[in-house]
Image (cartoon, rainbow, N blue to C red; front, side):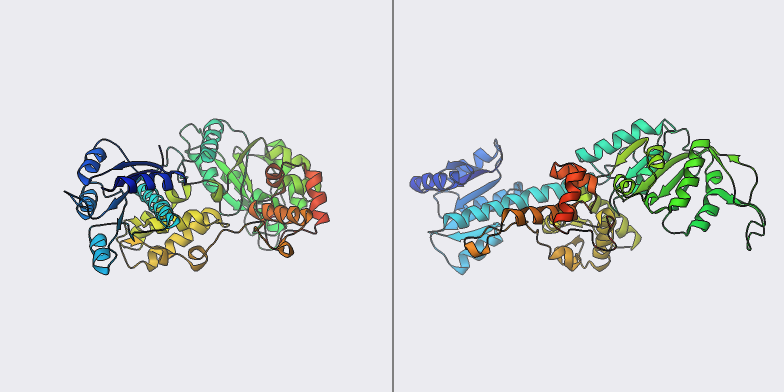
Length: 462
């Protein structure tokens, strides 16, 4: 049972009052009227926090606090006393108390202190768990994750690895598309694991050069073609060809790629004969290919040819505690690389990392952790080691409650703001947005046009 609190006070009326006050705020309260009885109870039951008076017969509250800290370091203790003084507060902190309050105290203040202490405890336990098992890699190469969303990705990798089916991997930038391609290629079930994994970024080259890179060229095909050259399709024979950023491929090149995939043959630039190839194709994109098809910027027949098996990698913001698993793995990697002794990170660091939205996904997290490790002054990373935009991040809300009618907005404006927020959250991926909003694509297009919403220049959906 969560949020269990043990109240220790030799005043029976105070115990009842605290049970009432905290019970109304969702805590499950058990009380004992002596520190000795409380210590006996702690030996057999688990609690999320302890609230203890100081002055009691027998063992006092500070002695109880000290005993808890020595034996149950993870259990937060809030000390309260009717004699508020600097000396009493210092004594409580020295005994290991999480917080110190004087009677009479505000119920909301105590509840807030308990909430903060319990959350801190949960984060510290999660950090300890991550230190015990930072790998969590299973059989998926460099991919780290234990969230349900990632288990679905792992299942798809398992099922497709033993086949030669063409795979389309979709994800936002920085989410790890090439890692999935590598995991498929290197999987223990893959008959191509011993062959090469050849990768090319389709957005990085002009059309003419891209064709030569993929299909090869004959001697004399163009000015600098002093010798014949095998293309990447042939270099990947026996293995896997990874076509990254497929959505950026020029239309003219798309037609040639489609023919190659259908015929399983390539014709080198300037060549007269087609050459068969034997490579599995894994394509990847951060674009919404269905939208590009509707906009006639991507061939529909090529879309169906590459989309035999679709693996969608979830954005980091929807993967829960995977962000901490990844952070711990990156801490270990960069600490070794930079020769620094760093054991992990503080609970406050973990809290801030969990709160941030990570629009750049795993790549952004990796960069942030490398920066933190590089700048760290202690064996444990702290909030101060994070980049300012992560350290100072505060979640935004679509609508802020207001009591002044002048601050309220129309229902139409609420809808506009919400759609804009969803589009930003999914990286302007219209397919993903329709799932979140629960509307069809035509309705989404109509609303985007109505509210004059468009992806910022340079974003994946632009």
